[in-house]
Length: 362
Ligand SMILES: *Cc1c(COP(=O)(O)O)cnc(C)c1O
Image (cartoon, rainbow, N blue to C red; front, side, top):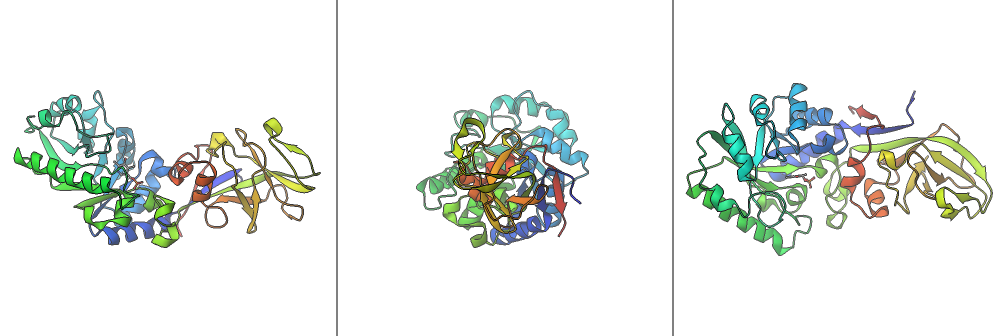
């Protein structure tokens, strides 16, 4: 019996399969990227599943995320890469959490922490976001004697466009900067650059470890590269919701705020108790839900907690029935992404905390 109004079902077996596939593809160590509550799939459950499936490392953005994993009893190596100056670096060391370093200001604090901090040096090879760029040569003069340099890494900006010259330029710059680091006597054992797209498209940049996020959740980094199915990936999240209310309406009924759409025929409408507060994009057009394999498109504006779908004149759906918003049948997270000018990453990550995650162990 389901008592919720909406549920995100997480197929942990799919995560296992995807990790196995990505590990096989890379032929290297695999860092499972579980930032942002494992892209909305649930930080701790996904992390445990990924490790059991063969992931070697976990990667998060925030130090707090890493500490949550340690508190859950996870002992695998963890890298946190958005740890700014002023962070509690001591607790990183105490909890045996590796930290990415991309500024001299942060490094100076880390170098003073009791016990040797484990660091991964992040360099900007052309994305012009994270990593050392202007401070690089000054950083190379640092005293590294109080830290342990475990890793050296960067991030691709356009790995989802494998033919782009920028990928080759970034890889070349990566090797140059690594050589500069080695020239001052620092030899990090783990070098990593590839995200999901690079892991799927271009094995040559796998180095000693890949950092895979979206593909582990069974989603393609870019639909132009290929669908989940074409890569053999299994989407892990299925978002289901209850038809809070089903009603018959006449043709010409204006639906929702602003009366932006009217029914074009006598029909059945379904009200779904999820809205933009739950991560359903307000801007979405041309997406919808499925009931018994039948597609029902969104009609009218998405509200904060509700939206309306046109079930059609012959629908047998009734109040209290369940529909699929995206997942294992009907619409996909990719459909919702293209319906809202976004990417599947944002669709799954923004499913809000009011929606319980239900773990299917398969
Ligand atoms: C999010 C992130 C990843 C994972 O990217 P995907 O495209 O989801 O595989 C890898 N590395 C870093 C530094 C990231 O921030």
